[in-house]
Image 1 (cartoon, one colour):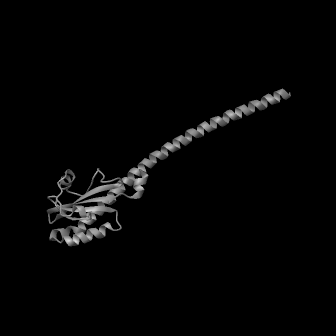
Image 2 (spheres, helix red, strand yellow):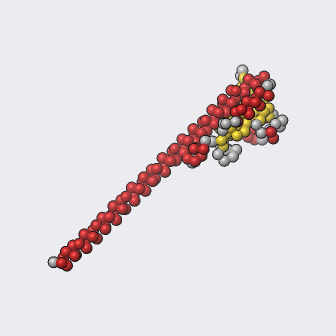
Image 3 (cartoon, helix red, strand yellow):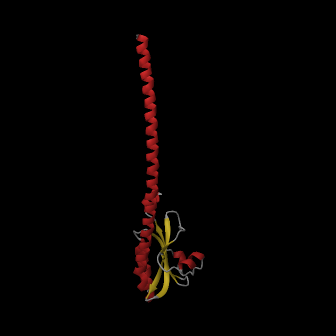
Amino acid sequence: MQKFLTGMLALVVVLTGIGYLLIQKQHAGELEEARAQAEEQLEVVAAEADALARELAADLVRLLSLAVIDNVASGDLESVESRLARAVQGNRLVSVLVLSQEGAVLSSTDLRFRGRVLDDPATRAAARVTEVTVSDEPPAPGQVEVVAPLIADGERLGFIRAAVELDQGAEEAR
């Protein structure tokens, strides 16, 4: 009888162990599925954060173009300089170029560009934009370039090229 009970106890222990292993395997599969779903959701959130950051950058440069258009139209470049300096402080604007339609730098937050005429492919492409555009080519990691036309009374006066820092959260979500 004792052998029988010992055998039964051993069988129960083996069956319990097998049951435990099956439950662990099931949980491992559920955990893997949950992890895969979380990764998919993270990718969606990262894409949405990136789109929102790019939209914010475009809005920031759009507002800047509205703030300087009258000064550019009147030739008051000193006021443009002042507005650019204030805009860069405390914002995500890294650098701003205000250019004539021919690529002459009218105003810039970067002293290296003042008084120059730019004729590179990016500037020529920027001169043709008809609405605020966010470039697919980043000027530096974590930044986007935004171009905004400067149009007053139906006349195209030039354009703005600005490097804008993306939101830290959008970068980290990637």
